[in-house]
Each structure stands twice: as structure tokens, then as C-alpha cells.
Length: 402
Image 1: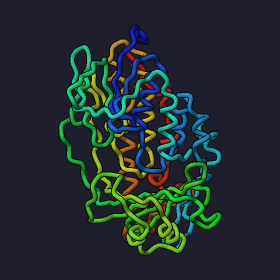
Image 2 (image 1 turned 180 degrees about the vertical axis):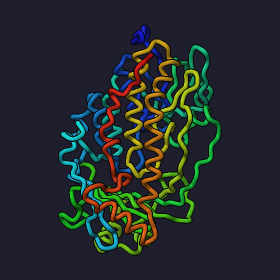
Image 3 (image 1 turned 90 degrees about the horizontal axis):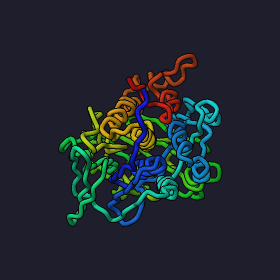
């Protein structure tokens, strides 16, 4: 039996003004809730460079009324192509031109800052408070509270922690947790396309794979910039941050045995940064009382499926749906978890497994990987199998009620 709709305008505090937080604010405000976003930075900004909006994310952005602006800021790759970084040979090609027909939504590659600005521009009635560092959150039987640095306290009916991988809200609910260093280093670079020879970078997402690492290259900002993410096993421990500066010489030194094309990509990289990859197991629950989690605060994941931002956007839509369809906040949060926790846990674990496949070392293991890619009848279902990700529809995923 359907639950009654909310009979009053819930006040919802959103902690964090990143992609997940703003997507939640937009979805919630579109359903009539009074939303206030607390962002600790003095201005909205998104670290990093490229982000992939696969069809499962694009489908949600369409439901939020953002498909047209997404088309303006995004780049649509023609295919996902896997190549051996030793000799450049193509190992697998997955066409994406028909993604709209096959999955019901298109595939885009965008700059994170452009995506954030696009969502922010659509917020409407949602209030955004910048330079607002949250010191604590708490829940009571009938509400929740946000305490800011300096002691000011704001009361809400619900608080949503969208405050990222180092989430204060997650720590409040689950206590301190120590992530596991994966022994993997990651570099990113955002380089103007004109730095490379004309036509050098194909209009595709190319994954260069080798022993103990891989490099992903694709266009953003309508093809004006080339985004590169390079991953390699390493004993070095680098802080879990995207803001440690790096350089083209350091990138080149980290990948000494690659073919000439990859050497050009690395040697001409600009705006380079590095960080260490840390892993966490899926949480058993996200909500207690009138506090819940969303996005990286709930399910931080390794980048090997390019689904971190997409999962946050899916979360945002489902949370808004559950709250709009139930007059009991805590019951609605249970339904939100029931819909989202199994999906995000599967993606977290699949991303972990994908990293292991990407970074095989022994010649025999790599031969088996390539054999899996080259098989015509049944390619290795673990590697680059995206149907289960892309076909998922978060706009129609809520479990039936008893």
C-alpha cells in the first residue's frame, strides 16, 4: 500500500557542496523540501578534472531537468578502447555511439567544475551557505541539528552527510575508521588539446593497460582539454588527497616502459597532481535517527569503474523520492538504504576487483587477461562489462512496500 505524501515542508540540512550534495539539494528542493547546504569552502569548487557520466547517471540528470545543459558541457566519446601500453595494440573496443539507444541515455565526459556549476545553477529555492564549516551533527527523536564552528546551531528535520571521503557525519555515526592503503598511486593531468599533435588523441576513452598499472585518456570541455588518469602500484604512501602537485617528468619516470604514444601523453601532461588510493569496505548501514549519508561519505570507492559521482547522483534522486513518498522520515530512510546500499556495495566491490584485473603483473596472468578480452564469444565478464551498471534506472528502483 502506498504511503501518504509529506503533509508539511521538511527542513533538510545538507553537509557538503560537492557533486553529491548539490545533486541532493536539487532533487530535494524540486520535491518541495526546504533545503540548506553547508559548504566549508569560500566558493564552490571541485577538485580534480574529468568525470564520466555514464548512462545510469545521465538518466538521473535527465529526470532532474539537466540533460540539455549536460549536452552543452560534455563530450560524447565514440568508444571505450583498451590498448596494451607496451606495443599499442588494440585489445577491445566497446562502441558508445549507440549508448542512447542501447541504454536509454547517452554517455558523457565532463569537467568536474563544469558539472558542479551546472547543478548549482539549477538549485532554485535551495539555500547555499559558503564558508560554513560544520563542527558537529546530532539527532533527536523529532529532529536533527547542525553545529557550526563558532557555536551557531541550526535545527532541521533531517541532516544528510554529503561531506566526502573524510566525512564528519560518517565519523559521527560510525566512529573513527582507518582506510586501507591499496599500494596504488594515482596521477591526474588536464592538458589543453593543442599541446598534442592534431588528431593524436582519438575521440574515445582509451585505457592503456600494462603490468601493475593503467592509464585512462579522454576529452573534456567539448574536446578542448585532454584528461588523463594514470595508476600504478607503488610502495610509496601518499596522503589521501587530490592536491599534491606533480609534474610531467615525475609522471614519465613512474611509467618508464610504455610505447611512444603514451610517452608523448605523459611527457606533455600539464596541471598534474598525485594521490594515494585508499580503500574501505561497504558500510552495513547509513542512517541513525534523523541523520543519513550520501555519496562518498556513504560509499567511497576506488576509481576503476568511474562510478563515484554517478553513485552520488543516483543516491540523491532516490533519497528525494523516498522522502517525498513517506510521511515518516526514519521509515523513508530505511527505504532509501534498502534501495541504495546493495547497489553501491556491489559497485564498491566490483571497482576493487576491477583494479586487481587491471594491474596484473605476471606474463601468464596478463596473457589470460588479453585472452579474455580477445574472445569473441564470451569475453571475460569481469573486465569492462558495463551493462549491469549502465542499464540501472535509479528513477524507478524503489522496492515495493508491504
